[in-house]
Length: 161
Image 1 (cartoon, one colour):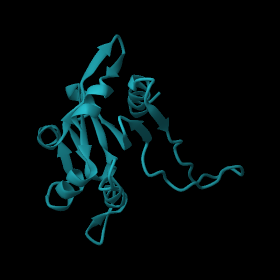
Image 2 (tube, rainbow, N blue to C red; image 1 turned 180 degrees about the vertical axis):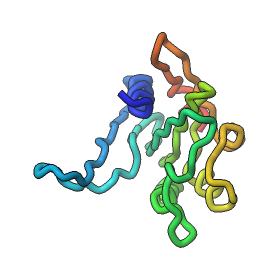
Image 3 (cartoon, one colour; image 1 turned 135 degrees about the horizontal axis):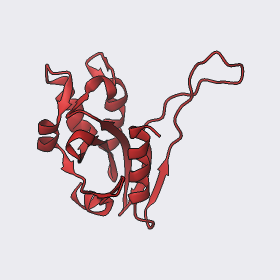
């Protein structure tokens, strides 16, 4: 299992059972096989309902202490294609859209709202979000290492967002 999928799996298992959490299936793609089909990309990785709010969550895991904006979305006409659309959804009452970014090299994980990330991407000459910047604009998601995998304090993260 690759590190990104492991992160998604650990996060999913960390969500308290009383909350609704659904992992959207990854979209398919093109290949040379006869039985494949192309599927549109999903709006996010997880849809979670907790404490009266809907969370649209995109999870990203990076080995380095920097997340390339290329892994977030493409700029088109001054807007981030995927993020700007979902940031608008995040402005609706009771909807929270954002990224949970796992910096594996630093053993730290943060939630960053889509609107803060979009603003940073559009108003910065840099091409990535480093750990220090993420600490400034994000909310720490506490994590505990259990032998190999992490358990995330999703309940506390929800309270702080």
